[in-house]
Image 1 (cartoon, rainbow, N blue to C red):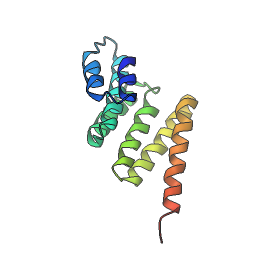
Image 2: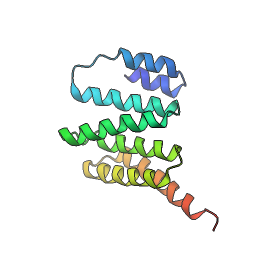
Image 3: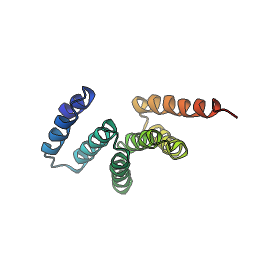
Amino acid sequence: MGYALCEIATGQLDLAASTLDACLFNQFSLGLWVKLAQCRLALARKDHAQAIAIADIVVEKSRQFGLGQYLPEALFLKGKAHLMNGEKDLAKDAFEQARLAAESIGSRRLLWQILATLAEVESDKENLPQ
């Protein structure tokens, strides 16, 4: 799966999709990591609806099975998809939920990204013409 993330980062989106399809996982939690990578791939492809659908699956499974370590990233990616779709209120709501989830598990790695994005969303609102 690490290869797929590198392929996404370098713009090799078809190769990343192929790599993710080839990922055989036998642990449920590893399956959620694959789903998060697929969500990032959908975002890179600008397929916002697909990214939201995948993020929703990860959010649901994370809550259902108490796997809080996946929740902040899934909510953050969902917020990014909404933001890219121009749905700022939905994005802000997802980012706020991601912030709370990241704080609850002490994930500083995601928290700084979430806070920075929330600050951008807020500053965008303040800069709108009256």
